[in-house]
Image (tube, rainbow over all chains, first blue to last red; front, side):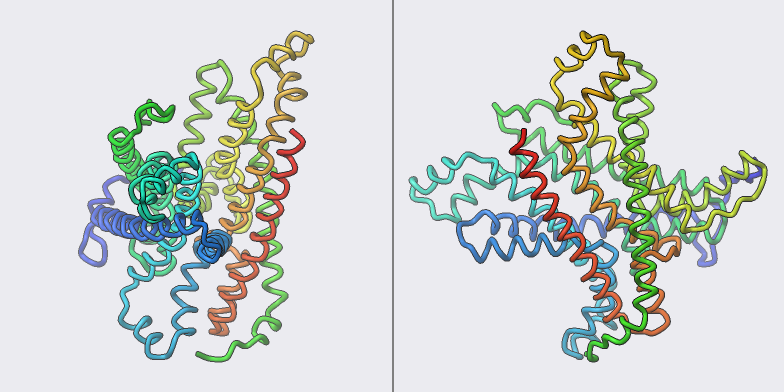
Length: 244
Length: 226
């Protein structure tokens, strides 16, 4: 194979005075930042939507269902482009100009990725709550809890534990999905990957390094949540046996 | 906000339709190829031969850990190098063709996990029954286990295909003209992002929403028959 292997290039200086390995590290930092921030948005909104879909109130269910249908049936990259290029044109001029000029890219990207993932989290939270016996809600109500208190003290603490494995895989997905934000100008790991290939043509070396970096992110996330799973597991459930 | 100009869409409808056709072609190719390779991987994963198990597990875990956009670009760049190494000639592949290959091998990992749980959902006794009838391993799988596994998993396989249909939009990374790529290219020229991206979103939504409702109905029907 007449490919010219050269691992040294990582220590060469790029145009901006930084070395290429520093580009990789900077990308890794942005990937982590975008992913964790989006995960926070997604968990918060997804939980609210998931709870709404299990309430007895019709219109709350309808809003939750519509949200999930809408955000699950449009590709992520299209959703990001909508937030970046379409929404600023649809809102009043003043806000639109502010969005285009002053709002940092990263905020829009986090909102886009967060709202996209929230639909998936809402599905998990809903199925977690529905997996609980109906008696748990009745028991709560019989004790004089309000509807909200049965969620807060009885149902949600159980539901989260049940769906933690599914939430773990969503949290790992968000790191992979964050790569798509390169298309709207976030300088994350995939963006740097693309740029380093354009500058150096050392495709194989950088592919190996970036692939390993994504592996590492997924692995760390997996281990951290396995730890949470172990600490919060419910005694007596089948799922409460392994930390995997 | 400027007024929504429908003429931008009608004027470019032909180009958009071509893009949509390419998206559908990649989806169907990757679905068929992915399910075939995925089934083979699932059988390897469940076989008693250790190296086959390791290979299948490694393959699936590898592709499930890396972002699809990265795989799309990496294959697009590395495949020509590999072909040159194997044949000694420069064979130009092009972004459009490389995507067929990428999506097939990438989706195979996901379909394989679905087929694996489908095979595991078939009662073990049926394999014994197959052998008792004098079937070979291949016959037991082909005539007894796989048809049931496939049928049990049909809704999940189709749901994965809807995800795949949406994921084809990521060929944007190598500049191939799929449905979204077509809309993006028109936007670069006509500078009408609102009309173009909204159209893409609406069309994707209508297709995927309709398909997912169909899958739901299919799921209900299969559940009754069982």
